[in-house]
Length: 308
Ligand code: ADP
Image (cartoon, rainbow, N blue to C red; front, side, top):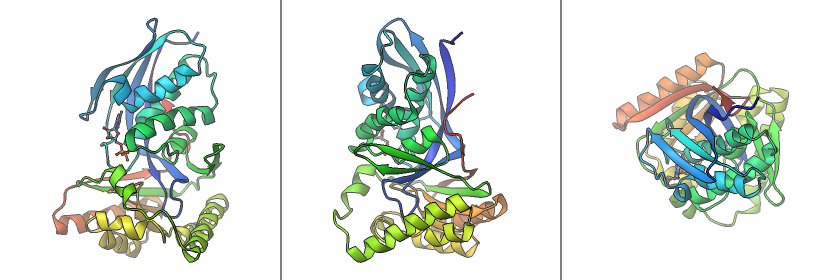
């Protein structure tokens, strides 16, 4: 018998992964929100509880509500849902706070009504939540939350998401300096054109990263974690970025860059021990500068959202 209520873990995600602006993303294991979703006879969506962050509870102003309504609009189900959101991911951190809520809502609803929708359809619904959060319906956070592991958004029109292999020894270190960078601001400062020269470097790295992930070639992954287009511009908004990156690489990280639109900075390492050393190196930089931070070390989450 189908249950009427489930509790899910909604992972934090790292979008862009240096070379893959708006197309690459990965899901984390150690950081995420929880949500409880219940079926109701009453139609529509109500957010009945929201703890951990000060965010709007009105259905149309919360990404969980907007993504959920996108699902309901396409569904035969004639009831509604109540949602409780327990935020652990800080909004605006750059590790997919909004994506965790929009994906958690639609994934749980789909489970409760007998899974009529494919993961790709769930990504489409969740993208409506991203449109509310940042003004752009990007999929690079919501795709890994739903599919798990690394994902590539090969195309937006039509939407085509490819799940990429996750090498087992890959760990992420993420530091979130406590400064505010709005996704909308960090998009506005980007140029809308790139040079052919930069394009060549960038698609070389995207191809190299994908090949490295599939063949579990950690050196190739490291060489490919470069961003010649977005990082040089966005890193200006993140105090200490260059130093954090330098120290992470010196400590043995395979690569280091901006997580999503920042201000979080991520590094990937081979093995948990190096990832922990990288965490220490990153925190030392912010301790010296005098900026507070949250720090996370996490295995890559190959499964994505799950029932808990
Ligand atoms: P992140 O990069 O961590 O996802 P964003 O800045 O993209 O952060 O998204 C946060 C924005 O989305 C904020 O303006 C916030 O008010 C809005 N928002 C609406 N509902 C939610 C929610 N359930 N969780 C997180 N953010 C939400």
